[in-house]
Length: 308
Length: 257
Image 1 (cartoon, rainbow over the protein chains, first blue to last red):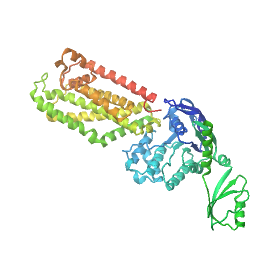
Image 2 (image 1 turned 180 degrees about the horizontal axis):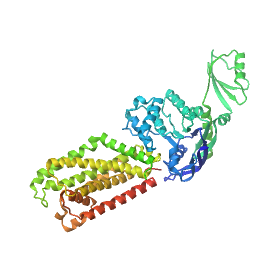
Image 3 (image 1 turned 60 degrees about the horizontal axis):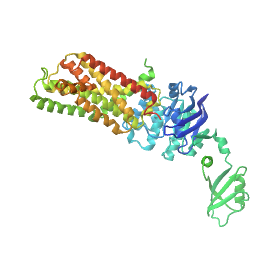
Image 4 (image 1 turned 45 degrees about the vertical axis):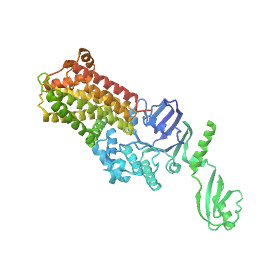
């Protein structure tokens, strides 16, 4: 079954801004789906329409078979939303925020408190349960937004930049938590500016730019379509001259750091063999850039050129 | 019929509203108590002692029902207007809009909060009035129904204001330039029979006049207007505002892009 079907979605704001130009995509049940695009691409408008915060101009949206136009109430029951901006009441405590949100979905207080205890402990917020939300750090607020969205146990969780401004350690722990939620059956749609986050978590991806869908495929085939990868090699000894590397394109970043481009079909083993023959020892190696980031830039830049 | 989701959502909104105005009681409950005490002291005791009886009642007794009603309507109004606008401004209204709770339940939840604050203030002002004068109970049914309907009417008006407001100034303008003049000119401190015929007729366009007089009738048995007309006027305004608010919410006015 499809968790979400979006068909020819159109949105023109009262100001005349045409935010979406008939985009279509499908998110399968159980998927971890990335919805990416540069700022102003139409991601938040798409999410706004799915969650009924924005009125669409045209098109269809179905969530687990329920139509947004004719069965809105059942659509709403399926969805949990983690919005981009903090929008909880700053005068309420952590517990009040999550229990109230559950109440709007008809979850009685007793059950809501039991669930809140589990989720707040899981995300390290239990000790802050009686703290007014305005006293929380940025990372705690982000986690609170996730807990708030989960209290009614939605089948589809939509995360609009859930880790913005969160340090890497906390981001990793949030990734683990989201993976666990996904493994337990929750379908997740993620928008993010951290492309390694999308690469690490998501199986399928849609890229929107200027209100149009420019790519909709699975993560693996998208990454496979990247023909060149750049590796940075850290060397044991400083080099005076550039080693001879036959078909590899390489340049020295400094005397102990070498940058090498690998095209499809070229092997790292062969590169190391060449280096070894010339007495060059590699102590460490890393990808120069996030591969998805490269693709993303390539796709959106290409679209910009077309638009221009 | 209210289903389980909407019932729990209604209790949640109401509980949230009550918690809000009790949490900030120095802003919500204390100011009307202090200002009404000053009204009773200055207008009722000091100035009122120089004024002759009004239809057989002391001036203090005459103004007490009007002061109670003035507190009820202004507090019911400002509670809903500021709470709903605050919720909208912080965007935590989205919590309700994305949930399967009906617009009717959101409206009734906020309005009930306003009614409860209005009635609570009304009770406190009655207790203060009893320190200064004796109050009769001429018709308990009229007292209770007018207090309830007036707080309902002004809570609905506050909701309309909160819904339409785009900035905090918009929430302050109506109480300052509309509600306050209407209450002061609504027969709280005088009988409209003291006015010339033209001003008497003009006063009858003021909805607050009907509430003040109906409430005064319930306590003292005195009124400048026909009680049935007063009750009908209040109910007509309630129905009109209720329909307006619900229609605006259905359209997503001020809430959805």
